Length: 357
Image (cartoon, rainbow, N blue to C red; front, side, top):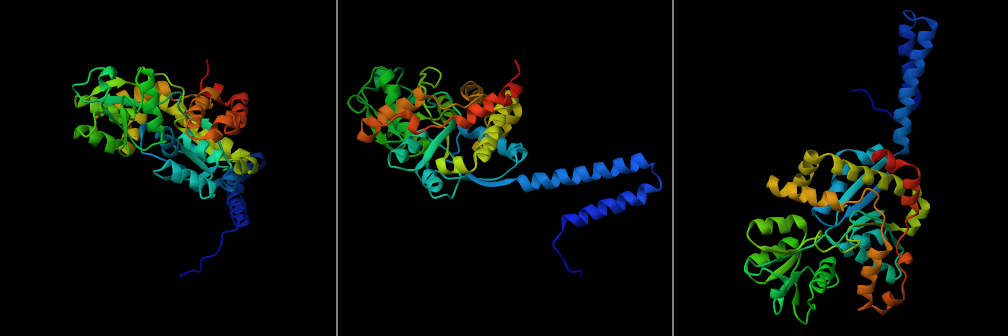
């Protein structure tokens, strides 16, 4: 066997020249030099792209439909397009995700905004740079015999855990419906979305807040939908993209490239229905195409072309946290968001080229 050796770029250039020389006798001088130029340009383009690829590790925290843009971005190669050698990992806990971000095990995390605020209040160097959704994406589902929110008085409502996005979502939806959380409706910690649906199915609770893909399946089974993200319009940073201020300062271009890739993923979602449904179904493992179509249509109206985190949405969350944490009462939303990168992307014309008027 021949010994293997490290490949030297100059070897490739030599090969290019030799290949061109073999053809030189058949080419005119201008054609010869043009062929050499083209071959070198192709070689250098590949070498530069490889050299510029930045290795990053990013996480997302749940297998739910609102993470479809990041799945699309990976499946369609948009991260590679923007020179990112990205490893995407699933960390099924917002708390664990933020801990990995703080420890430097990941550089970017897609997770609930509440976890970022809680960590920030505790002194962590984390900041929200984008959010993919423009509203709280929870649906309130009830047993078949319950036809209105008023009938929830004295009943039980399932959430994942206290302090979670589902907890806040449940309380906000109840308040919008004229009900007092805990006083008029008991709130129980049950677990993840599938666990909450199982509790509802077994009759252990009378209602639950679910993400849209599960709520549509529940509705097909005869459960009652009392409120949807479109009927209860609550601006909320449910699916935030966060990083550390240190990383943002050290590698602003990497954050910019990541956001461009995800923005293009959202654009693909909005304009490629069948392929987006296929990718979403692959990760959610849902075979019901009618339900998948409904989920797609819902999120098409929720995902933002330019994912700016809003002061209003963050303030909703901060005000709720202030009821339990005195530090939140004195905090300012601006401490937890940084829209500099998104503003630069928008100013560059990147988004307008994706969405020409």
